[in-house]
Image (cartoon, rainbow, N blue to C red; front, side, top):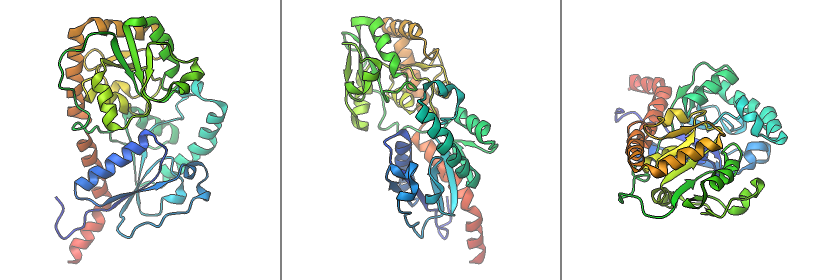
Length: 351
């Protein structure tokens, strides 16, 4: 507990609004800090601030700010010279991602994102990563030995299991939450659902047209549109399992949210996901890209009510024990205090 004579550090988040998980992270962290009595504020920047930073005016840094916390992709133009925390949410420089990039994406990541991140990490007072996997990528790519892992946190008061007990009769209901990209495994949804057939249905976020690049999805798939948190929780509580055949994740927020809702998860054994999912205990991990293994795993889950119940209970318990929003916020608050503690000590000595 801070001395009543010492002001808690003020945290400022200049952030590019892109509609991604990084936006969700920033909004939830800021809200959590405010709930703890700290002063915190987000300065949202337009999307072009990421790739055309010189076309966006530099916002004035409020006088009360002690720590500026940014995404590693944010250009130095917006970062100021106060104590900086840089968070790496996802490593696009992982060699295993190369096969799923277009030439334009590869050029953008190599010629623009990489030097921008390198500069941000070099200037930072503290570098954090959202998973052990992402931290290892930062050390390998940028030669940065000091990376603190602070896993993303889930609001378990919002993402929680449903009140109902046994599943409702009818086709086994799967849920996919994610973009229609190859990195997320969206191209695998159609062959998986075709092989599963009419006894399985898939509800997916987004619109059907977005999946046209992969030839569209079969008749047992239904688009849900874009969901806010309340409707996402409802979709997770209504489903029987999450199907998430991603090939690479920085953390795996969707997986953790589904687990918090007690939803059995069938996802890939790759990148950060084994940090969240314990295979056969709190979820089910398949070889990334192996359509037959995903199909067999989903059929087994549909046929085994006891396995579903066991995974459901263990999944929600694991998130509550290891990946809560309260835990994440408290860890960042502690980091901010460490960064500003020398200034607090000088203030105390002067009184």
